[in-house]
Amino acid sequence: MKKTTALLMVSALLSSTAIANAETLRWARSGDALTLDPHAQNEGPTHTIRHQMYEPLIIRDTTGAFEPALATKWAPSADDPNVWVFKLREGVKFHDGADFTAEDVVFSFERAKQDNSDMRELIGSIVEVRAVDDYTIEMVTDGPNPILSSNLTNLFIMDKGWTEANNTVNVQDFEGGEITFATTNANGTGPYVLQSREPDVKTVMVRNENYWGRDQFPLEVSEIVYTPIQNSATRVAALLSGEIDFLQDMPVQDLSRVSASEGLKVQQAPQNRVIFFGMNQGAADIEADNVDGKNPLADVRVRKAMSLAINRDAIKQVVMRGQSEPAGMIAPPFVNGWTAEMDAESKTDMEAAKALMAEAGYGDGFSLRLDCPNDRYVNDEPICQAAVGMLGQIGITVNLNAQPKAQHFPLITNGETDFYMLGWGVPTYDSEYIFNFLVHGRGSDIGTWNGTGYDNAEINTLIASLASNTNLEERNQDIATIWRAVQDDQLYIPIHHQVLNWAMADKVGIDVDPEDQPKIKYFTMK
Image (cartoon, rainbow, N blue to C red; front, side, top):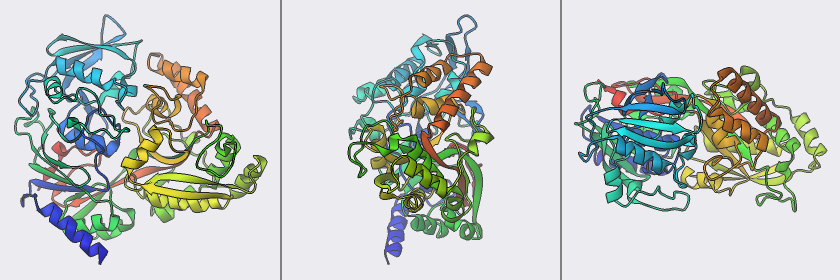
């Protein structure tokens, strides 16, 4: 009864604004964008929605290759190794008709470096962005940065005038619960214009008929109706009934049923993302356990025991229905620095895990809270439920706290969780991105997603050097050294590499993007 009622509600919601023609794309996934503010949250689904309306200087296409967006050319300066030169696209207008110029780029990068920005780690090496003329900018870095362009694919450009006029120059304080004009409004240069926004309910976008790339991309979708549907069964029912055309996060338990359904298809590809658990090893004592006066997670033997207790093959077969690849490091195979040897290091050995627990003085176990999202990753809550049972076998009683990502993520960034699930994609395809966010000690503009309390001065120095080391052989050796420390210290518990399954009506044409960021301008509609 509840399932039927939910489906009827979704059906009414979707049909209320959808235009009944082949150019409307009715798109659903489990969660919504956290905010429309271009610089407030560095989170995949949030970027995905913004990519339809805003644009960076450079994007990646569905193969992962660079493609010009608001910049047409970019390269290090021939005169100064600390400067990158970008030639901007001319004749581009924002949705409100204002001209796009270098002034907007300078403004956007300055805004993205604010304390509330979740994008500042990506551009931490940039000390100045200056306009040479209306369509040329120079980015000055604090040393040669050989991979600067890789850090810019999700750094969106805002209209300076619009932002100032709407009192949203400051980045939204997302963790503090602030709501600003930029939270639910948008004025970008992208292929789609925001028509309406109801957070966690529905977002409608219509094609930008004045888009600079109108003749370069298919742009066959004239209207996007995006609806977050958290319940897996309801999402699949909406797809099977024809209420939606494109389901981005297809539940693995329904793959066979959908694939066999007339008029529907499922497309699959490895994703540039790893799912893992983080542990607060840095605190002298933690709140979420029953051990007084000390922190069991501070002992590397306990962390290693917890990793040994996780049966990744069982999670793959039972929870993920074969749709994952067990991971031994928190880097996807796409990324510079990943090795097959390290990715095979995670093992399951209950006896060895129990021995380590006893050696660390926790033979009788302890209790701990696990914070987990329930609307962000494929089967996130069921994975956490499986881990609860596995850790129970070595005496760790885990109390599961599963909640929507909007409530879950601030626990990590605010340092309010001791044991948590997180997933990480790497849009730069380089380990430096992982290290800056997840390994470097937490500071005002670095390590913002490192909830482990790990802060190693020697490793921090090595990480900082990666941004300016142009000797790629030496740089790769430093990357390997950092990874060895991460592995030996059991900084995280890797679970698996996600596999993407996009389900859609036969009329929808698109290749799966390994970033899990569909850009609707590429879609075709039969």
